[in-house]
Length: 183
Image (tube, rainbow, N blue to C red; front, side, top):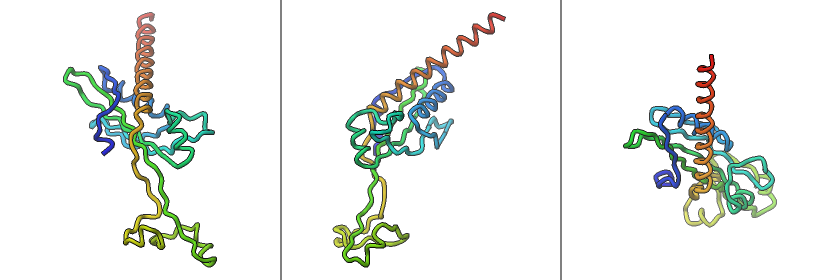
């Protein structure tokens, strides 16, 4: 659902290869690790990155103070995806989308001292019991991630970083051409 929504920011370039490399460098700049690289399809997807907390001043994967407060109070993660497509004018457009997910873990009831030793153990294939959900016949996984929305502020920051990377590549190409002509 969140990835199908329209991108809030995008950037265009004449060269697909440069745009692809700039998108990859921008993802790495924000701490994301590329996972799915579909060059032909124009899709670059990263591994989920657990969002920074308030004391991690060296990280830049959270764009707003509200998001920083949220990720410091609960566990959130972000996944970055670039869709690069050809425009009708013959140029290429990269559209980043950042999905935010929140970590959830079901509570384990402690009804007697005998159950205390197992309260913090996660046993495989065991169901939670004694909760509101199980009393109604719904059995949820003990831990899971659920999407809460998109990080539009970070998407805008990613587009700015792609723009910087493209400018850096352009300057490097000009310097190489100037060095060749001086020979």
